[in-house]
Length: 99
Length: 281
Image (tube, rainbow over all chains, first blue to last red; front, side, top):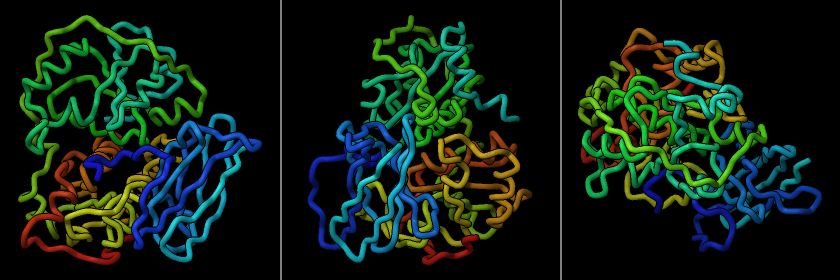
């Protein structure tokens, strides 16, 4: 467990316990991964919940809860967002296209 | 206190990278971002290794802070401009920390690394060395730092501002949603606290909202400007961001940051804890 509040390394694979709800995926621009994008997790009301920076391979990951979420990416080359619905614990995949 | 005295824009910063007497410092918990590219000429401050005592849960002492700033080439007269990732959380923490040890001229780069990067401003990997100084710190200014007993005493009579996300406030989550959730302490919040997530004080690009927007935000949450205030979060860095908004931008005089925050309070034996949305606006 991190004793700070900064984000852990994005990407790679992690062990997800049966109680955790993980939202993860890539930020893409015309199909190419975008690293260094600011990826924001917004709840079902559009309220900010968390933010990470995508890895050089475009990966991001959030530890959320079941429900409807929006992931929004900001990058100097453009912004984009996608909705994801997590019906229960486990890993839920989502991609964000920025333009 | 006004905005111009405590906050500088990315544009101003880019024009003043070479200005004598102005030192840029990047502060983060994870300093790999700095190593991968930083604002030209900026020194690196590692939130954990440079600012925290390696053994006890506390800050480096006055002498340790003097040693750190001397080695970084920062003198008492310098204007220090702090910035970092994570929407400037750790930079805001460092700002509060510099004030704690009495540094006169310290400013926050509005929007931090995020705004700088989104603007496409220059970053480089040059190693930065500055000539060592003989920095002299003051005794900690405890008028801006709250400890646990004071926090318990503040229940019901001071503004307690919990700046964590609503799910952390209610006890549903024990950490922000970008972190794994295994934790030792109990969930919930300090009774009588209002919940104003730090993120509500910032725009999407990481810059602070206007004074008018900030004033409306805290008023709406039930913040009483005539009372003394203590801000807290999980480990004290997000609440530094809100401490900055309340004291440095809005000018409320008696505002303290509780750096022990939830990881201390939520582990104390016998203190009251409130669950659910409480008095959340």
